[in-house]
Amino acid sequence: MPKIQFTNLPRGIWHHLLLRVEERRISATDLGALQKWVKSEPSAPDGDWYKDFGSFILCGVGRFPKTILEKGMKPFGDPIE
Image: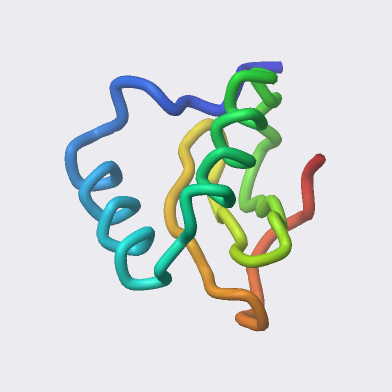
């Protein structure tokens, strides 16, 4: 199973994620939790997925992360660990 890709993302995806981090006011602590998870090299499921970090939700499709939702927003896809 391929890994979720966090390096060399297409420019549009990277820009969108950075904007969402700023808009959602993701804290340094929460970004640290994301970084730790990224270092675990999570597998990329087929189709839509999301990872709930408690204070925000990372959503993606296949190997690409796509957006960040605020706590309480409804994610799409299947939850992953």
